Length: 236
Image: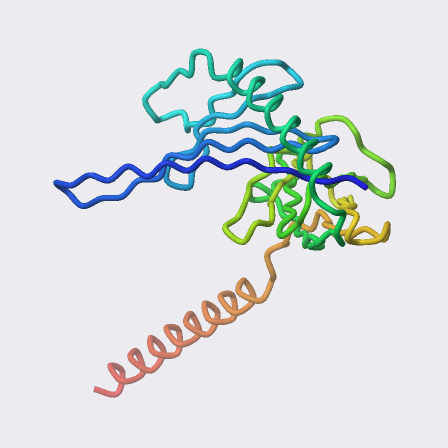
């Protein structure tokens, strides 16, 4: 049975002069199949280790001042090894218990407003899962899609569960139907499937009709007023 071990270091820095509390977080997580090491500040991720590409990834927004993390990837590798050793010891010393599972929820939406023929991205947001891992697959018109698909890092919530999202780059075409399916051990192989259809609203003709009718009545009113004004002048 897969077991999941997590080590969490939390440092609190207090400024006495301004009475502002900041939280600097270093997170290390490992299991039989997953590993993660990240640095955060005040609830936002600053950096994480990409163990597939074997490099560190700075996740600050583009407008932020550039920050480097020399030696952090190597430190992440060391922390993961320590995490695995600790996990092995926990398994030996503790009696197996029933694993607490939290089934995930999922939602799907477009990153930007949909314009036909303009490249966009679909986001499949998976929330409230425990423990990792989770698998996300995509389809387009019932055909499996594997290209232009990405998966984010796991994000740990205060309640101990995790969030993660997958994105799919696509070009909207009228009538196309996309779906993302989420698989997790708590779902007992059923999975959760969310669908999304390209449906660009066409402006209604109602406003144009009302404007046309109003303009016509207005012109008739002007014509009638002019007629009676002329008749009145002739009577005088």
